[in-house]
Image 1 (tube, rainbow, N blue to C red):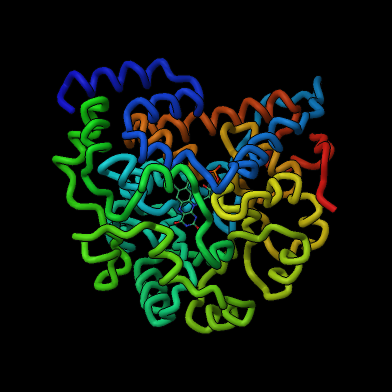
Image 2 (cartoon, rainbow, N blue to C red):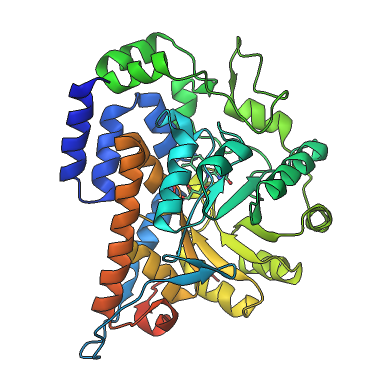
Length: 396
Ligand code: FNR
């Protein structure tokens, strides 16, 4: 990863124009198993494809001659300002895409003026991430069987001025991600014949292996993955650590240990959205985990309008999964979401070109949102409504 590799990355980044280009760069730069862990989803990946297709299927109703000399993209998410309506999703193990991992993404999000959600399964601790960011931070938790561990992490998040706890509820058990099964993807990643071969094919990775510290979860210290010597699969780990008995009653418990905002991530039906709003959550993330859990779960974008009708403003709605451009963010907001949430887009950027890649992506998204509003004839995010789009299919 000397000057030659750096220059090559910079040259490619300068020529990149979209998330698709960053994805291709990441595919070239990362070992196959790492790229597939990020890019892949459960079983036949129907839901992954459906998330993206749902955006492609929405058409705009652009209004012209509206006399709008200025367009503004700023908004509020959970009652505080955001540069535009996007939240960076929690992703476990972000450091496998680039040695700077979560720190790079947190810094880029703060520079862009967007909230960043740190995953429980992160390779940097709650405190390390706060130390590099004075921006808005949310912390994502899973239902660990050991609720004491969850409470401990929540207290640390409060001390480090995280503003929201995001409880992910779509992971009762682990989805079957067949690309990872085929690759034998394990935690921590091991150096085997496959990775050594990849290392030869991908110079960036050799460097990463040699220079970076061992990759471990930072927020579950003392309860780490395996013993470091004998790797475990991610699915074995999760199936032994997570509590499939999580229920609505646990939200009451969460409220008793956390004074800040509560966000529930992984709602996939109108019925559950209603229950979440009745439980008083501040925001509902409509999410199928980017298609990584239940294959066949519905695309999220078509859920936004019916959920907005059912929830009636009691909770904010965040639409997660399949966001690949700023115009997708505009579609989600026009349908009734407060904001969109994106995971893979920034992981591709990170894998393609590190922190500078994420900066570039978030700058593109801002420009996309601005351009899309201008071409739609909308003066700002608050003006967006269902009159701006046609959503072809809505769930029953
Ligand atoms: C995720 N996601 C996720 N969600 C979560 O609540 N906790 C986690 O630790 C992770 N880890 C994770 C790793 C990777 C590699 C990916 C791609 C995703 C899901 C994530 O928060 C989000 O729901 C999806 O990424 C949204 O879909 P897109 O934007 O990737 O299409």
